[in-house]
Image (cartoon, rainbow, N blue to C red):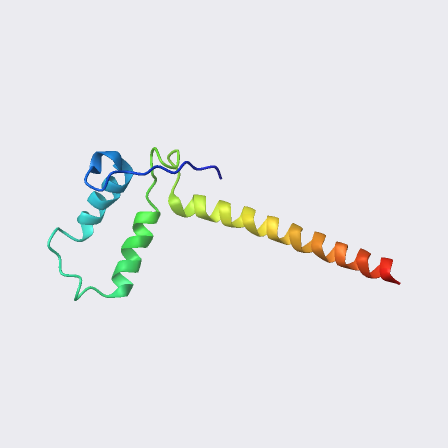
Length: 99
């Protein structure tokens, strides 16, 4: 997955549109001024799960973050398996050459 890194000025929320949008969505569950002292981790995990199931229009071309993560993770696993096979094959060839 190709991505571009942008640096935003800390005091310029307009430079971080998707971040600000997600913060606004978070306020649907926890209004401004909410004390997180009494909020349980389980509750935060549920909200995070719900937010990750919501599509991001621009940042992920309308895809849901969880779906994109799963696609990238599977691709990474396929690459890792291919690398391990190639490494094993090279090891075996080296051992055969030494004999």
